[in-house]
Length: 86
Image (cartoon, rainbow, N blue to C red; front, side, top):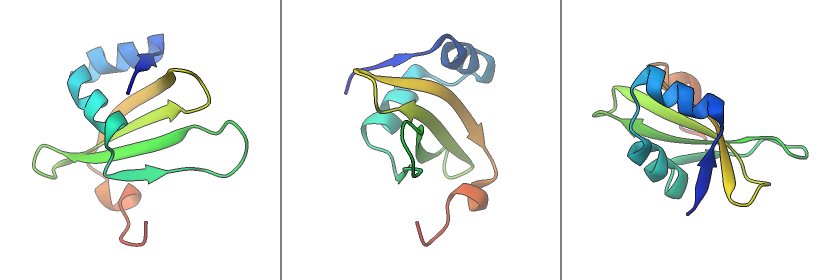
């Protein structure tokens, strides 16, 4: 699936040392997909990373063609974003 990175997303990848290949994996086949209600709200795509130590979150704008990765980050707060009911 083609996508483009915003300048902010590129900076975050570099700052956080996240390989673009992992972003591609999450964009193409996320373990979790969160779609907020309302027009033009960014979608969150998440996957567990590094043996479930981190959650990699990729925030995308699905309304563009190709989709736009707005920002990327990893978090240890897995339970905050990864609930059993999702």
